[in-house]
Length: 235
Image (cartoon, rainbow, N blue to C red; front, side, top):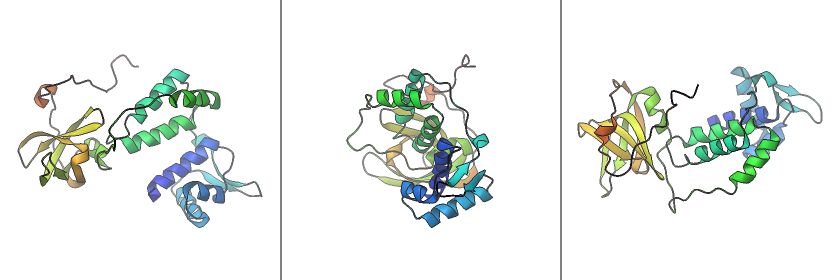
C-alpha cells in the first residue's frame, strides 16, 4: 500500500467507526506500519484540513468529526449486493483502484444489518475468469478525465514491442479484458490496445483535442456494444 492509499484508508477507517476512536497502535497493526508512521500520517491529514482529533485516556485514540462522515445510504439489500457485484467485476479493469475505494465507502455507510445480509449473499457469488487475471497498469483510468496524451509501451499478440504516443478516446471491456481505444500517432489511426499488454503508460504534458468516438468506427465483428453511462430517466 502506498502512502497515498494508506492516508485515504485511514480516513475511511475512522469514518466507519466515527465518533468512536481508534488508537495509533490499533491502526498501526491494521495497516502493517509503526505507530510513529501512523501518527505522522494523521498529522499530515490534520494539516490538510481533515477534522481528526486525539481523544486522551486509556480508551482514547483518534476520532473523525461525524460531520465529515458520509450520510447512510438508503440501499436495499438487493441494491447493495448489485453495487458490490458490479464493483467487484472491475477487478481487472483500469478502474480497479477507484472501484475498491468506492466499495469501502459503500461498506462504511451501509447499516450493520443490511451489510451482514449483503455480505452473506455476496459470499455465494463468484466471477469466472482466467487462471491468472491481469489488468491494465495503474493510472490508466485517469486518461479520459485529464485528456493527456499517453506514451505507452505495448506488446502485441506476436510479442512485438513498441513505444507510441496515443490520444485516449475510450475503453471497451470484454470478459476479463479491457481495451484502451485511442488514436495512435505511430499508425495515424484508431487502435484498440489490450490493457494487460500495456506494459507502461506515461501521461505527457500535452492535452490533445477531444476526438469523436463512434461505435461504427470500432469495427466490432462479434458482440454488441453497450453504454454504461447514466440513462436519461435515472433522475
